[in-house]
Image 1 (cartoon, helix red, strand yellow):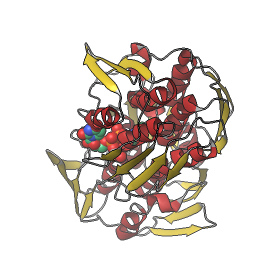
Image 2 (cartoon, helix red, strand yellow):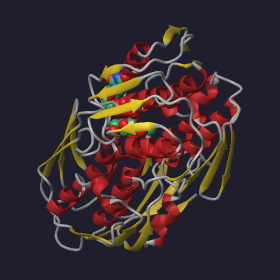
Image 3 (spheres, helix red, strand yellow):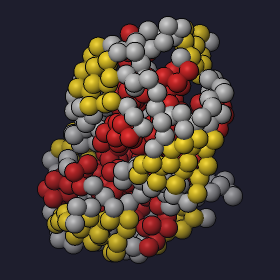
Length: 424
Ligand code: UD1
C-alpha cells in the first residue's frame, strides 16, 4: 500500500514492553448524549471531564448552530440553552458525526419540531434508526422521511407512551429519554439499553429537574416535567478507552495502573484478561492494575453482546491481543454486521485470522511484523495501534481521523508508558 506523502499518520516501532500509569479520559459515548441533553435545559449547564475529541467538537458545532452557546475551557464545556433559535441540523454537521441522531429527541423535546438528514450506513454496516422512529411516533411525533431528510413535528406536544424495544438500542433508549423528560405524562421503556452511559445521561437530566428512574436496568420510567434548568455534571470515564489501554499493556506483556476508571463498567472485560493469564487488581474504587508478564494463553471464545455483556467496541482490541497468544480464539460478533474490517490489517502484520460473516477464528502467533496499515473505523484503528505495539519493526497507520473521534491523545498517552510511537 503506497502512503501518499504528507498524509497524517502514526508511526510505531513495536516490540517494547509498556509500563506505568495512565488516567482514563471521559467517555465519548456519554459526552455526546449529554451535550445533546443540554438543548432541553432553559439555562446554563457545565460538563466536566470532557475529552478532546473531534466528535465532541462536532456536537458543539451543532449546539452553536441551534443557538445554544457552547464554549470549551480545558476539560469543561459550558452550554447556555436559554434560547434555541433553530430546529434544523444542517446536512454537513449531521454527516460529521453519525451519533448526531441523538439530537433528535432533545430538539423535539424542547421545540416539538426538528429537521435533520437521515443517517446513512457507516463503517460498521447499516445503522438503521427504525426503533427511534417507531418510538417517537408512539409519543405523538409526526415523522416524514423524504429525500434523505427526517421532518418531525408534534403540534400537540410530546405524549408519554409505553414503549417496548425489539432490541436494547443505546441510541433509541437515549432519544426516547430525551423526548420524554418534558413530555405530557409518563413514558415507560421496556427492554431499554443498560449501558453506563444511559445511567450517566439520566443522572444529569435528574440534576436538571427530570424525573427518571430505572436507568441502567431494562425498564426506564420517565415522568414528564414542565421544564428543565441547567446543571453541573462530571462525565463518567470511558470504559472502551480503559479496555484499549489494558489490551495495549497485555499485548506488550507489560504492566499498567489505570486511574479514573470505573471497573464495574468493564466487568465483562476483566475476566477475559484474567482467563488469558493477566493478573488484575481493582482498588481505591477507581483504579485497575494489570500485570501481563506471565505466559498468556488464548481464550476459547469471545461473544459480544449488549451491556453488561462483552462490548462490541472492545472486540477489535481483544482480537489484536488474541492474535499474539498461544491457542485459538473464536470471536462471535452479535451487534454489528461489518465489524471485522480490522482483521485485514492484522493479517498484513502476519496474524492468522479467518472471517466468515459474523464469526472470526484467530490462531495465535508469536511473531507479527510491522507494515503500512489504514484505520477504517474508530475502534478498528485503535486495535491496529494495539497490534502494532507487538509487531517487530515499524508500522505506519493512516486514517487517523477515525481514531481522533474517540481517543484523546492516544499517541501521547502510549508514549508516556514507554511506547515507541509518534505522529508524523
Ligand atoms: C452505541 C455506541 C456504539 C456502540 C453501540 C453498541 C454511542 C454514540 N455509540 O451506538 O459505540 O458500538 O452503541 O454498543 O453511544 N438497531 C436497529 N434499529 C435501530 C437502532 C439500532 O436495528 O433503530 C441495531 C443496530 O443496527 C445495531 C444494534 O441495533 O445492530 C445496536 O445499535 P445501538 O445500540 O442503537 O447502537 P448505537 O446507539 O448506534
